[in-house]
Length: 295
Length: 168
Ligand SMILES: Cc1cc2nc3c(=O)[nH]c(=O)nc-3n(C[C@H](O)[C@H](O)[C@H](O)COP(=O)(O)OP(=O)(O)OC[C@H]3O[C@@H](n4cnc5c(N)ncnc54)[C@H](O)[C@@H]3O)c2cc1C
Ligand code: FES
Ligand code: FES
Image 1 (cartoon, rainbow over the protein chains, first blue to last red):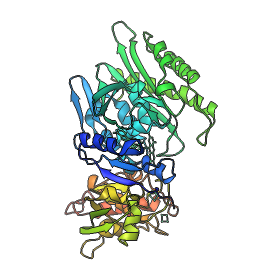
Image 2 (cartoon, each protein chain N blue to C red; image 1 turned 90 degrees about the horizontal axis):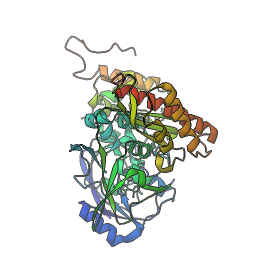
Image 3 (tube, protein in one colour; image 1 turned 90 degrees about the vertical axis):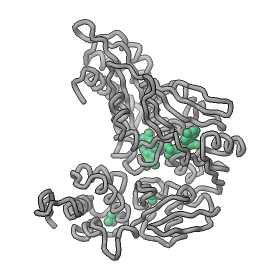
Image 4 (cartoon, chains in turn yellow, cyan; image 1 turned 120 degrees about the vertical axis):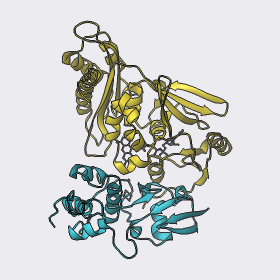
């Protein structure tokens, strides 16, 4: 029987209160959101915080809303809530594609968006998604808030720029018309972590006959892509005409630049192959959606 | 630390270690052993209960997190001595063999039917996809949930229209 080791428990009632508790209990304290990564880690003694600061009671962090030309997603929004959000799905189908294949419906009831990003597991699907769509993370400290692009958020496996006395409060995603997005994941079985996954967002310039790619974002999970994105493939795509051949080449470039490692989910060359194929498929589907050809 | 929570309509207060998992609290402190504990990896779903109305794998939450909140377990499915239609469905369609996965399966099924009274097979399978049954091959579980949907008040019109044809 695996159970966490001794720990103290505190409840935060507001963001300010959480920050105060984090300061009081110091770097050995940890934020507890859905607990669906932290509690399993505590059972395995991979995490042994002295104090847990439960933020589930903080109101105001569970909102999904449009503000100006930004989609804003609170850190305490649950996976299930994001999957149910018509607003999120309308602007970024990639969010719904990904949420449908993250864990299972029961886990999705409690795991949070903020927890996913802060966990910084190399296989975290939402890190790839928010990287692809160039979201910005809002991080609150006692001296105020700072905004960090998700592409600069992760420092490495299980490590982010969020300091021990700070709280991630929100994700902001800029909205631009004329885009499409999609997520493709291969897992060993339903509800499991990715063997490999790719998310793509694409904006088209329809000016002349064949539309060209005006901007693209590609996120990769579980394959050791720097900051969960495939920048070289994005650079290649900009300005290219939309065609299956271009998407296949972008997939190849993404595969060449990622650094998967072999583990129980598969050998490195298989993951590299999947990266190319899934990137290509995600781009094709994103482009079809941008052209209004697929819901 | 002292925690108070409502479980199946009754209020309980206990003094617990903050590290205690909710599943162990329910089973060992409240002696509500209907919910099962089947794994250490949050994968099996034998421990599924409702926390504030939404299914939760209670092995992946601390009892402390449930303080002040409302819990429903498999013991809370029956009302006034009458089994919930989901429980009746599992009996009618042999939805269990050893019964280990059953409490979690039924809590998820009840939740599904509250949201989608007449689910398609694919929706039933999706709903229970985070739960493992080593006996039934799932087929009879899906059948049981379908039976429950068809026999729920409101699922069928007065003349029986709207109800699925269910073979038991
Ligand atoms: C069975 C199972 C299958 C899963 N499958 C997948 C999958 O396929 N794909 C996938 O991407 N994920 C998967 N997950 C992980 C799931 O998405 C988790 O819910 C998520 O990773 C963490 O969210 P949480 O709210 O539970 O975070 P917690 O476990 O509460 O926290 C995780 C970490 O983030 C920190 N933290 C949390 N919130 C904040 C905040 N607002 N500010 C600062 N720090 C914070 C915590 O201190 C902790 O270090 C799975 C989990 C389980 C149990
Ligand atoms: S005991 Fe909770 S998922 Fe297995
Ligand atoms: S009935 Fe035995 S595990 Fe499901």
